[in-house]
Image (cartoon, rainbow, N blue to C red; front, side, top):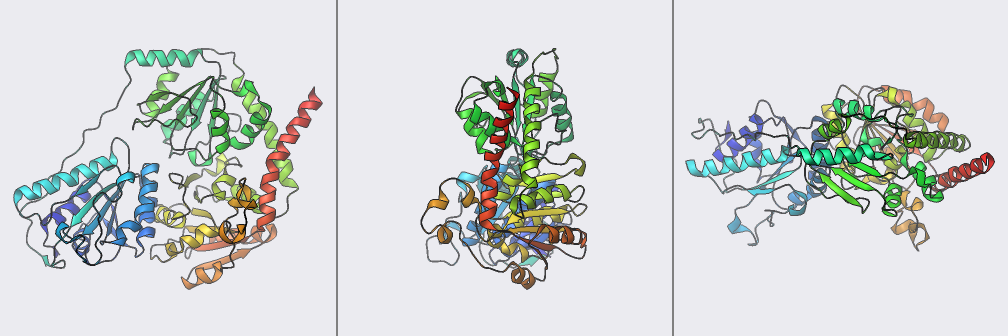
Length: 576
């Protein structure tokens, strides 16, 4: 039995035929025809998640891992608004979501009807494109129009770059009628023939010449799920003595320490404090998502004697350093290959200067950590060395991803690292990781989050699809510790109540209420004892709470940069 609404039946079938394999459905009445249609699709798995905000982030986690569009289905009214945070994150992360919102017919909007708001284009600023299907299409021409809109929406979600699309669907009652009749107007499929953009010969020659002439070049890899062929290209650049490669943890660039810089902030701190001009590039090439590091943004905004080239297929004018020279609309791989096509010998020491500095700073880093007692910094030191092999690590905002960027990713662990850095919000961290774990059952998924983010997304645990490979590590320092670290907030009146939002909520009671195993530690010794059992528990998802001291953790991180800067100065004086 399927819904008797032909347009809705076609919608579900078109989604299936165009490669959709997951539909996340939140319960409701207005969306009943959509639910009936999607559960009839043999190749689409339908997942029921009550909380729309959590459901949307769960879908985001699936799409993030599979790089295929995931359908979201909800009822009308405020349910639609609850999708907003995840849609914004998907928009800036370039993740394909197909958002289907059931609605009342237009004539009943602003007429006091239940669960009715203005839904068409409600996500206007955070969506690739919005669509509204015709109400109750019956005739062949109506169905043709509806099918055309659906095809266009799905195609746009996947090309030229991924992103979310919204289809609003006004529905008239009755909503639950079903039928076994054969569809008189089977859906039509429209595909996009994709093309590979390419620069003209003159532009290629101009950029290639500039690249070859420059003796100091920098490639900054933004947040991105890196393809294997792209890794090989980046490795090739790492052999050029005039090129230094910079990356953050969620860039997923796994190279040897002597081939790139993965801990940007500590190097930039020293370079900024000492105005070390020999470390400044002539050309900066960027691609991928946004950077976590503020230090590198501020440094290169303060100087202008270089060119900034940004690679993007969406023609985005990301002037991150306020010195943008070229927006290059070409796939990253083909452009990098073009730059490598004509190799020239270089006597530059630019790369080696950076690597030498980085090795110095790594020694200071180890010396500083050696004398720290148990705190957030020590926790991350231990975690980053002991993640299970091939783990997918999902870092939360704000301190977890920042701490991650202070440690070199161990290449031999072969980790993949993600974080919701499109909008960088506190919401949806656990739900996204849960979605990722659901479609990556072959590897551990480790969600490393803070206490506030964990409580904020607690409905992620209200979910029947939490896999045994899903592990949540909560760093509980009793509030928003990031506000003790960044300059300014901690000096405000009523800081603990309104900024840090100090709390005594129980993680143990919350997790137990959902039937989830809870582990606890408050020292490095107990962490070392508990972590192997926590990771090896294959019965169900579990939570590890790590209790730390907020004040000491904040001070330890703030003193870190002072320490490495002082050590650098002392060594420089000694060498002179």
